[in-house]
Image (tube, rainbow, N blue to C red; front, top):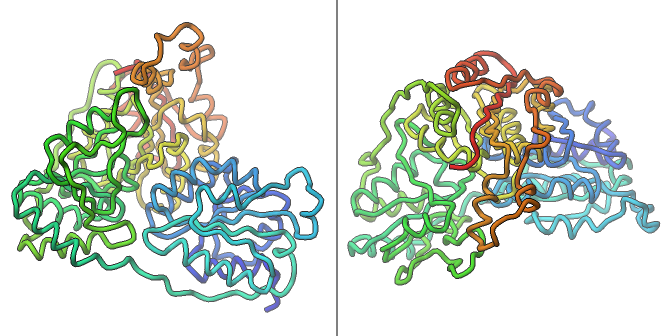
Length: 521
């Protein structure tokens, strides 16, 4: 079959198990768009903003372990998507970013949309290549997929000039082998086994491929239980498996003060696919490195290595059986009554959370009760804001729903963050995705009110206060959602919220619930 570049690109992607493309195309990508009708194995999902596109690809990758493709329009399109690419990079989410560019012959004229795409991409990509010939585009695409899927997973950005896409002579490349995770180091396992036997105060800090793996969580819990050690997860894990029948793991606190208390008194901190803990921001008079004085940091497994294998080897060395893990017991939550607050909202979520739900948490300050309230619910996955760049919740929920159409998705969403990528609702409606979005509407950037005092800023005056306030006018999420084709309600109390959650979960397609709660803690 004679193919142009775009056709060879699409065939190569699908033959290498990349069969979903989240897209916001422009003129330079029209041949790719046209080629979608020739490659019906590729599911194309339109996003109305590039931050939706990149966030959806992140959510898809977190739930499948496989990359989706994105299709972005030139440097500005990539720029619009960078915030959620930042989160995806921190999540080690595999992704193939396809960024269209001007035709090669046109670049010399410095047209209005000309930009340095490579420099933009370098901030969030582990692999970058500009395709220079139609005949080699298929090979470039295959290399991008391999790079994206090589553990621990990364963003591969392929820059596609328009003429490389439209020219004839494309050649598709079949499925390429992908390397697995590296084997853990025997020396590291022996060292950690020795320090655990010493009885000195020790904690594991787990992340990456451990926190989403039930067996790995059971293994590390059994080891910790046998040696009086503590187990902590990173502040924002990409995908945390939790609920009844699963070994519980306490997350490191977001606030440096809380994290410091959790780590206090340790002699050893063992990293398993995690980074050594640091404060999210610098604060006057406070240390950025959260490892306590006198504590030694050890690496059991790097992110490129298999954390589950390292833990299994450590358990074998210590003679610990994973069957000794302490698993969470199922608890039935009471249905809340009374006014809507952060606490009653969390209780309603816990009382109605479906089995095998995917929870995407960007509730910010309003949602601090949600995670502990749901710890003993039915088994579920909890996806968090790995890179701290807000506007992740709605797009990641969208991608997770595309990845797992048989599982309910619940997006716990702060109102301020929601406005960054609200267009996700339109994609959810267009695709008929089973996503229930709960807006935690405290009408403010409440987390910044808290941070204002923590950074030592002067008491805020009226101008400063206005910068953190979301009233005047108030956002109407019910109207905004309905305007994008998503049914929406605003319950008045906890009973109404619980009923709305049950109704949304019993009906197919997306729903939005706006829960107005007090600002603050």
